[in-house]
Length: 416
Image (tube, rainbow, N blue to C red; front, side, top):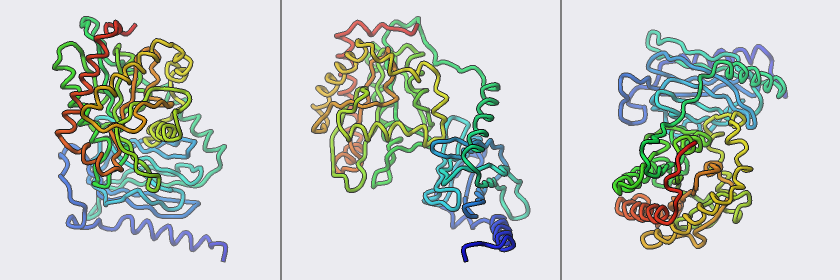
């Protein structure tokens, strides 16, 4: 009829509230998985209800937890910060939406901390965000109520929250810089992590897991040489914002930064294969490089990080990149890397490219991004999942790192 009487709307809203407090599905109906340690709360189910004026999200938990809710703009998002939670939600949870919520994602963002990020159809006001204790046969429940609002009101609330957060923020901690050890520091950066899974192979394997395993193997080989120190930007399934990856390298006095990824082409866009090494450039080599850079640079948006909060050393980084020495060293290392990798790994038909990757924007650290291959290609995926291939390819990259430092005096650089 084009309109909905308020009484009907109220009844529907109340009915969803009743459904949200119904008993959870039996354990046999839940997805199989390893049970979490008793120290971590467990999320077992999640559901949405409502319409484009009011939407409710409910998540079942095995016990009550604390939460912090806030909003972010461009794109419109709501973020829930939680203590570390083990998510045992049904398959495909969050892939679809309802009402004001288009989709949501969840995962670990730091040791001890998890996050749920909601992609919104329009600006909203957080009407309620709370967790209730378990009662009778019902589990503990996290409840988020959203109400549609206008953009101006949405942005004013964000500005107020940001002002309060800056006033309460603790001082940032820097990565340790061992100035007593003169050996060059190599920082390895396994892409993605935590809530940001990266690409997903047809086998179900995730990019974040593939590249973390590879980075650990590479780190072991570089350290065994005895000539270099090694630091990983993450050593477990934790989300690390792009700006933090840059700061980790700079604060620690890195002499070389290697970011490790695995690409994927969307269905219908061909079947590329082989490894590619990227350096930073304001102008992408081609449309594929531009697409990949845009995709990788959205990692912070996926995890609900406010990109406007970047400090000056990252926000003004493109100007600093006018330092020709760093650009030159990065390109020289890229060529060295390709020369060694081609002996053991299949290479892309254009193995060296450039694009505007935010993770490569350290102005004083030679940096490259290595795409090990395409998980969308059957042959590449087979290699990426092979222990033998990973070991041989890690050996070749370690050899390239050693060869790079052997020909350059920058290895002894330390942070100021």
